[in-house]
Amino acid sequence: MSSPQSDEGQHEQNGDLEHKISAEDAQRRRSRWAAAVESFSPIWYALVMNTGILSIIMQKLPYQFGGLGVLSTILFVFTIVQFILYTIVHLARLIIFPRSVYIQTSTNGEEACLWGCANIGLLTITAQLALTASTSKWGYHDFSMVAYVFWWLSTAFMVTCAMVVYISLIKMKHAQEFTLTAAIFIPAVGTTTDALVGALVCTYASDLSAALAVPIIIVGWMLLGFGLFVALCVYVIFLHSLWTKGMWLPHAKLPGLFLFVGPLGQSSGAIQMLASAAMKNFPNYHRGQFLEQTSTTPISAVSEVLGLMFLGFDLFWFMFALFFVLEAAFKRKLSWSMTWWSTIFPVATLNVALLNLSLQLDSSAFRVLTTGLLLILLIDYFTCWIFTLRGIWKGTVLDGREQLAQLARKTD
Image (tube, rainbow, N blue to C red; front, side, top):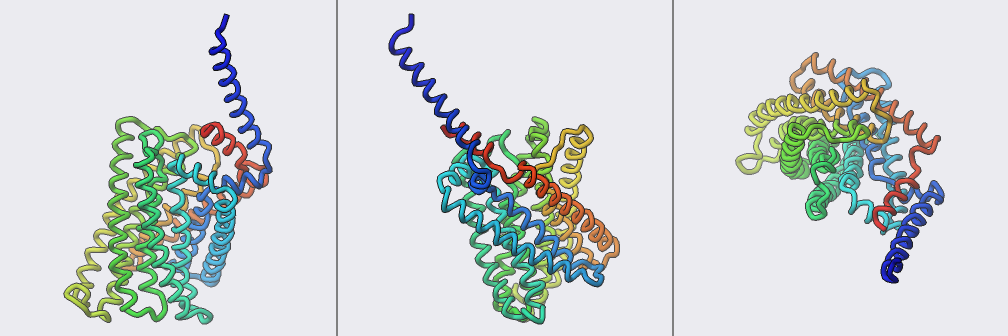
């Protein structure tokens, strides 16, 4: 015979269980589109990043043909459209569901890291403003100044985002060994992308004075150091865990391994482009002992050597990621998810490094590699779009009801 206290405790447990079940059922019964807005992940900005960086590569591809510039501009405009659309949805999400956004971000380290994608997407737009808009007949110098302002705003946001994310992972203890994913590289990729885009603005923006360009170059080297050395620390953690524990990532997350390629690929491209920006602007700046024309030759030589070294280490991570993804594919353990979008931008950073080397070394081999890899990336890009649109049509993408139900179960 049970005591009144035990009966009362049992009733409380049953009540809690019923509350949890009702909360989960309530989430599952919600409108699909309301749930989609509430659970709209920053991973959607990866589509902006991918579209933007492909438009940049097409704009600077060594082998140009009639219409390629037009295709690049179309992708540029599509990048802007996507960025505006996803930002509107995120603003609606923040206004209507602020508590849900806070819970999803504060309880999921990967979700927190993905916020860096928004700023990287904006940086690709900034780069194209300098490359395309500022050099066109309808844009010219006005867009150079827009790119200049965008770059400084993006830099402030990117550094803040990176620091908030990495400190949050420490304070909230999300970066535990078997919950750590490759998304932790995104803030580091963001700062190295920031450095590269700054160099592009200084090199290609129309009529940007040396007085405006040189501060960007100096800060660009600092951003490169920020992202590169943080990434090297994370590489050590991952490699040690993989060698001692084996691969712990679930098969659905394996395409995310290509994020390992991003920091070094972008660092290789950034250090080369910063050298080019210095060669263009230092002679006109002419201050101090370093910011002189005489400094540009050794800077350029050292940058090319370091760029090749970064590229070599990057190829290691590219082959590493490719092996595990192909192994899972041959075993038929892979299925499509939004994580596949992370296979484009990181590999495209490798392509940017190859493109810069093809220009700096006047190498036919690097030109062919750049063109071939771009074709592969375009196939990957359009394939991901096909599967994404198919998923939206079938309801497997942009339906956050099950995700929110699981979140309700965790937080109740």
